[in-house]
Length: 482
Ligand code: CTP
Image (tube, rainbow, N blue to C red; front, side, top):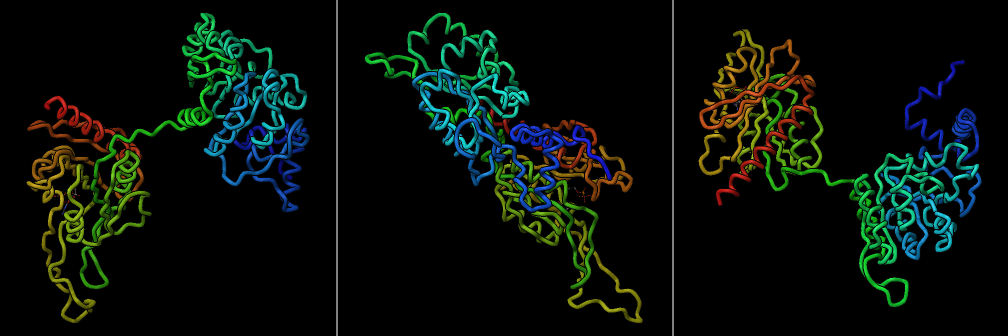
């Protein structure tokens, strides 16, 4: 029989096993046996550590499974203060945002909210004791500190903040805060005099220097009759929004508001209803550029020849066969802010295309008369009214790469050219990698930037980054001119 080395399993599986075995108070090996037994008996648990019910919860009901799969997890430390009641709402607000919550209650917090209420809302057992043999069986405070994406402290009392600023670890909450390498969000709550006290001011400044993020406190009425000022804990919804922003920072969208037109793939030029002239282009580079432009926030229209690729998400794709159809769709898609012509357009089409399938005859092979296709890149580059402000072509060459690309930029009238060597030995045509040189024209000057070999996705991301920079520079120039 083969043996299994737990140490060699991947990290996610090890984490799951560690957590599940600790909760069930079994060794990891025994837990694996149980899982396999459950699997054979057809009653296995879902593979998410947070959905595993504890064998013997110290407090609270058996965890319920929520329908939505959590996308992030937070350890919520509830400090001892009257604002602790708002933490119950905070648990709900975090869960609404598909954030799983495991709660730690300080001793003082238990004077304001019960572990039972917290457990019922979080659907998890509640942790409160640094020396709890059940959770410390597997270094529980380290797990609570690290097996989450972020730690939120709400309410963060003056005492808890003082402990944090000075590195104390004499209870579960402060030990977690000292042992974590995750982001920490504090929602302070205290009397205005405590907030303004020089000691608190020093501690807050120290915590901010340590990279801790604070939300609030707000100003308003205090629980103490007749007192008002800065010290009220932020509302649960404000804390949840701040936590979400830290967990999922907004993705930069440098091409937001820009319309990008891209051509990709080969074209097929019919000889007769069943035969055509084609080339080896796979469309991968153009499709990767479309996906990268969409991810950068652009509205993308992709005009593609026949390829075996799935349409990129969020991109409008126009499928065409021939060069003439591609030109038609490109013209219909204008105006655009940026146009990128990555298609390997057939230079010629058959002038005498057969209406019926050409038959073999004794007269020998049928003569194929070729006629030049419209040059889509040159046509669009030379437009006067609807020319996109940035027009980028590709140069597929098999020799004299840079010289041919320089000549092409001038002949076609585009602004930039992405030159690549498509000799069979490079494997570029149809392959996954590309070695490109970006030629940019500034007035009469052409500069060449040679990139190392990259995947086509990386080339796409790099090209979009260059475009975003150029767009930002142009916007800045326009703004200074006005
Ligand atoms: N291109 C185009 N329409 C054509 C031919 C090419 O839009 N009928 C575009 C390509 O999409 C590419 C650029 O022109 O952006 C250069 O294509 P390439 O095949 O390298 O060059 P050609 O113009 O075909 O010239 P040659 O075959 O002589 O190298």
